Image 1: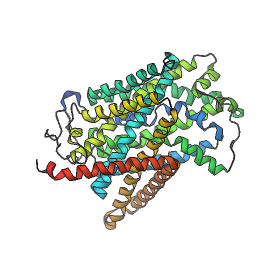
Image 2: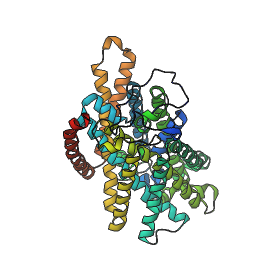
Image 3: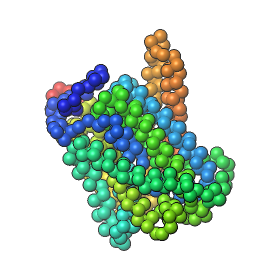
Length: 467
């Protein structure tokens, strides 16, 4: 996508492959397409990492005791390592597609396709999960859960509003993302920072509340927290829409991940210290309970419900864009259907529409089946499918470090980058293990279904290339 009215001051980024649809290489972006600066790119990362999960996390990990804070620390280290790896890879290849581009460039078409396929599954299933979860918070403000199909309709509206924002162009995506990120941080910071002034150590409860070993408790609580850190790759996936991506993608990724981690840690610690442990274990709205404990009254539930809706809408807005970017990059290379390469106003419209339709069908299926367990198992699969691109990206960085010319590389930087890449790879493996046997089994089936799609697309590539 070209830059309208601005000039790049750094070395120009490599141009992506011309679109398969026959449009100009960058499409007809128009005035609605605008590159993201560092603030918006950072907001995209933070907004995608911090969704609605933060409003439930303290109660989810409370049964393990304050030992769960160690799991937060370990996850944060791993997430920062991944953020640094994405920043380094974006310096080398600042193109839209992120992990897909890195895997394909390093290991070939099949690895690139598996990356795009698994990441695409992650995005549309995650979008359905966020929409269904948002209905629970909407019910606090407007009763909608009394009837199954009323709740389903509300979830579909929550899904389609961000999709319409995306179809309006990247200019509006960035605006919605920045505003929603700012709005959601007001109540989160109120609890995360204000709660420290009402902190009571007696509310913390035992360090290790569950049975078994402390390390087992760390692993068990980490398994619950895994989904909360998905999104560190957001700026890298949208590198083609970021101003000066060689510089800004890495910075936005690290700043956004560190900011999200800080909010997670402070928010959870503040809730632990303001809500008695016995009450927190059974709480369904821990941030509401924390606000009520801090200031009294019952208005906390309304405030936090509104904040959760804003948070989830902003998260859906960003994830909807990401859900279209990876298939767009793969379609340019002939690894996804050519329709996914069509772009209007800076947005791959077919990717957005297909993704929101699939997420809508999954949402309707969830309500029609009346079973939350089926849906929850699909959400766990996203933890596995998201880590496949993470692991391949870390492996791509390791490949570049090992195969590079030693006499042309700063040795101190080589050692530092090698340690970071090793931590990122180990973290990715831990994420896969933490997603559970059932999720890995079902996730592999999703990947194998993609193998059939790859076979069809690979067979058609000569015909595509000859057009």
